[in-house]
Image (cartoon, rainbow, N blue to C red; front, side, top):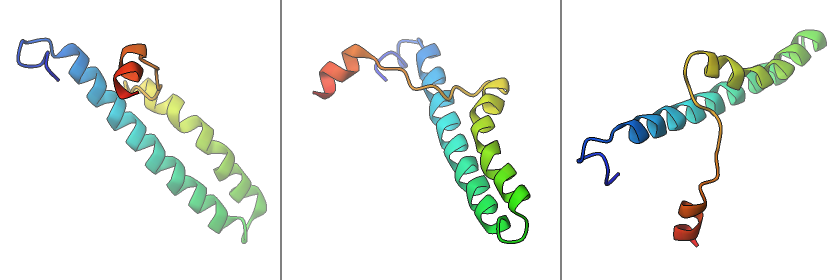
Length: 81
């Protein structure tokens, strides 16, 4: 955050993309899992297919430029501790 006023916005923009990607994937995965659980009573194959497709959400978000990886930054770990 301290580098943004100095004009170094690349790290901040990447952080925003990562937060947006993580929120989007968590929301979509929870929604698709819920839909799969509701559909399994009507059609077991459809419900199972929906539940298995949640693993593809981060890959699809990555195609559209969302960063869904969580990287450990040693310096931030030290500051947090």
